[in-house]
Image: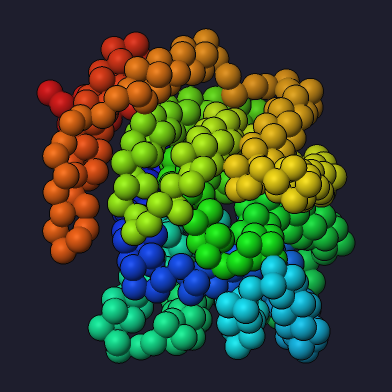
Length: 501
C-alpha cells in the first residue's frame, strides 16, 4: 500500500488545491465575472462534452489499464499500444462529420424552455465536440502514464490545469482582455494544449515502436473495449445528465445554480479520485497475477482510508454549507442548495466507502457485468430524474435524490457481486465505528455557527469565511483526535506521528 498511499497523498493535495481554485472560480469568479447565463452556458458545454467523451475515447483509457500489465515483453506491449491508440478516431471522425445533425438536435432541445437566452448556445455547440475529443485523448495518454505507475503529473493536468485556466480566463474577462462570448473559445484552446502536454509526457515515459502488427489477444481486447465503452458512457450519464436536462426546462441560469451545489457536494470525493489513479493499475496488476491476498489488502485499506478522509470533508462541507451559500451574489444559489449538497455528498461518501470495488470488477474476468450495471444506472438516473424533476416538480433536489438512489442501489449490487465472486468485502469492524464517528460529528456541529458580525470588503462578504474557518478548525481538531485515538487507520496514524511528535 506504500506506493498507493505516497502517490495518493500527493494526488490528494493536488486535487484539493484544484478544488480550492475551483471553489474560488465557482463561488466567486464565475458568478460575478461571467454571470448566471454564461456560467450556465459553460456548464452545459462542459457537461455535454463529458457525456460524449467516453464514447469518443472508445474505452481505450480503461483498456490500457486492464491489459498493459498482462503483456510480458516490450514487443507485445508495443503492438498493443499501436493497436489501441487510434481507436478513438473511429468514433471521433464520424461524430465530427455529422456534427450539424447534433447541433440541430441540441438547439431543438434547449429551445423547449421557451427561453430566448438559451439561443446563446447557437455558436458554441462545436466546442462540445472539441472538448470531448481533447478530453478523450487526454485520458488515453493519462492511462498510458498511469500503467508506468506515474500519476502525479497527469493529475496536475487533470485536476489543477483546467481550473487554473478557468481562473485566468475569468480574470481576463473581468479586465476585458477577452469577452464573455470568447471565454469558451479560449478554454477549448486550453484543452487542446493540455492534451498535447499529456501526450508528450506519456511518450517520454514509454515510447513504443509503432507497427501494424496486432497483439495475439486482439479479439479479447476489442471485446473488452466494446463492453467498457458502453459501460463508461452509461456511467458518465449519472454525473452530467442533470446539468444537461435543466436548460431544456428552466434555462441556463438554473443550471448554474445547480452546478454550484453539486460542486460543493462533490468536494469530498477528491481522495477517491486521487487514490483511484494509482489504485486502478495496481489492482489490475494484482488480478493479472492472481494475487488475491494483495487484491483484498488493497480493497480493505482503500475503503477505510477513503471513508476516514471523505468523512472529514463530508462533515466540513455539510456543517458549513449555509455559510458557503452566503458567499454567492444572490439567494437563488441557496434555494434548495443545502439539501442538494447533502444528497450528493452522501452518494459520494457511500462510493468512497467501497474502496477499490469498481477497479476489481472492471479489471477482472467478470468485467462484462459492468455493461448491464452501467446501462441500468444510466436508465435509472434518467427515468428517476424525469419523474422527480418533471413529473413531481421536485426541482433540483429531485435530481440529486435520483442520483443518490441510483448510486446506492446499484453499488450495493456491485458490493454483493464482488463478495460472491471473490469472497471479499471492503468492510471491517472499524468501518462501522467510522460511520458512527461521522454521524456524531455531523449532528454535533451542523446546527450552530459562531456569531460573527457582518463584514464586507468591496461588497464581498467576509464574515461567512471567518465563521467557516473557526468552525472548521474545531471540527478538524476533534475529528483527527478521535480517529487517531481509536487507531482507525494505520496509514493515517503513521502520517500523524511523522508530523506530530
